[in-house]
Amino acid sequence: MKYLIYFPLLITSLPLFSQDLDSIRQQLESLDEQNVKLRESVMPTVKKYGFGSPQMDSLDVLIREFDSVALSIVVPILDKHGWLGKSQIGEAANGVLFVTIQHARDNEIRKRYFPMLKKAAESGESSLSAMATMQDRILIMDGKPQHYGTQSGMVNGKMEMLPVKDPQKLNERRKQVGLQRME
Image 1: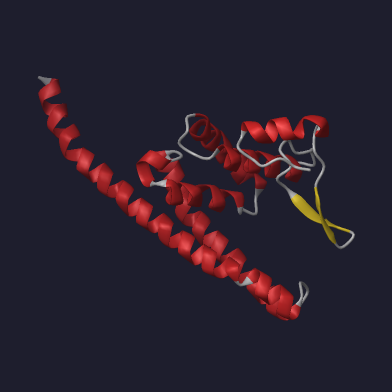
Image 2: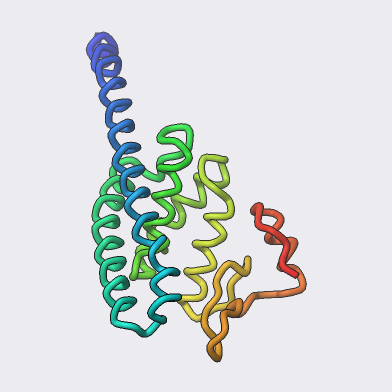
C-alpha cells in the first residue's frame, strides 16, 4: 500500500527535478556568460593601463564582487544537489561549478567541495583536468607543492610555474588527467 502512495509522488516529482535541473543549467550558463565578459576585459586593461593601474584595480573589484555573487548562487546548488554532472546539466554548466569554486577567495571552500568534484570527475561526470587544477590550487594555498603543474605565479616580474612535487613524474601525472605535456 505504501508503494502505491510513493509511486505517484515519485512520478510527479521527476518532472519537477528535471525542471529544477533545467533552471539550474540556465542560471549557471548565464553566470558563465557574465564571467567570460568580465574576464575578457582583463588583458586589454592590463595592456592599456598596466597591472597596478586604477583601471585594473577597479576591474579587480568588479571581478571579486562577481565571484562573490556567483559563489552565493553555486554553493546552495552544491549543498542541495551535490556536484551536478555533465549528463544532468551539460558540460558548460558543469564547468561553471568548477570555475566558481576555483575562484573562491577562501581555500576552505575549495576543500569543502573538492571531494564532490573528485567523485564526479572520477565517474566521468566532470573534467579530470578541472579536478587536477583545483587540487593544485588547494595544495599551493596550503603552502605545499602542487601535483599537476597547473598553478603559476609572478616570480621576479615573470610568470613561472609554482613548486611541483616530484617534477620528474609531472608529465605522467598530467597525462592521467588529460593535461598537455610540460616541456
